[in-house]
Length: 522
Image (cartoon, rainbow, N blue to C red):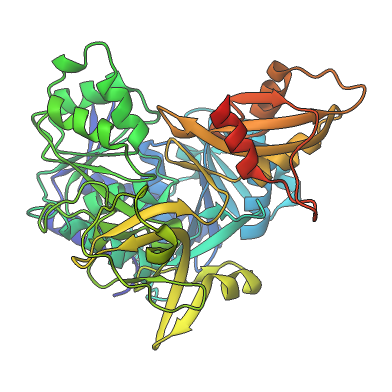
């Protein structure tokens, strides 16, 4: 196996006339798409860029993302996907840490790039969707050409997404060509008949996110199927696209399925063309799953994974049978265990899911660890973080997921809690420390803590508990606006509560469980 993009080249060879991308009524064939990636790769090479150079993609789900993504790989570069909801202060660290030399950004986002450009290694800014000061348009940047695919080994970096740790500092995840290819190929085979050339995949999951990148985009393009990107989520528009184009596969986070069933005309939707629905990002409420499947024909199958694992490690396979409430069985070529604090194996229960109110969870649970060809090389430039993330045992390199769970005799795994303080809201990960750091910068904030609280639609939502300074008179509305100005929309506190003091331990740590208990008693 060599360069990840070789799999796309194979699809071009076999299915050149097939639709690769369908977007807003226009279709791009595989042959046309391959020509566009060649023009992007040539543009990089003529500017002296290629092997191991980082190219940041600051785009929503639009065709240029796919062109730049696979064009970068074709030239031997490394893709750094960035959330288009991020603001200048958020992308500044990603660009500086990765050393990205090129940024391809939506025209409206270019000002955020130029605001931090002097603090980074960025040499070229490319604007998509219009002119922008300080940037070349994509059309100006592209150069005609049909370059050879750069040779890359399995263990060389292909994509470097960023994920925050408990410290709130984003970490670059080094995903290799081997990592991503193995996982996309595995994902392609988990569904009945595999991903077929006549499949049409809804592309609403963000492409900067590993789920949308691997499980949706790459499985489609590796197999000659069509990918239909949507720049933003809208339940009515998504269903209309499914109906009009007769899409066959839908992947989403739980909030998306919840939105669909709660539309006023939900019973009138025709999803009969869809043969498979997948869900990930966080656990889907059983009631949402039940209602969706009662309304429509397709069955929802739940998967589990992390950015660091490319992402899929477990899947409730329709081939092997589904167990509601479980994240499924370990996917082929991946191993997983439930271990205690000493890395000893925690025995399985007879059959899950168990009644968590009746069971002694301490006896049956432990941390889920995984090993396999999909597990990242490591965190970029962070040896201490890598030492903490992995354990060498039985000749394998095991990655610590940070999730607490159990497994049963039939091989199904179940997640019951998160070891870290991460908040999962609508499928996005929010780390409280990052929001807290921003709150502490406000002149009227003396103390602050952020916690996740239950939310019917998003699973969890972000709530800020704030102690004002003696002279502070900031309002909840002003805090919300302050956060929206500096952070991605999904990270901002949707609830703000002012308190006299925060509950702390004798060593000064905020007792967030008490904040959540107070919320539950409210």
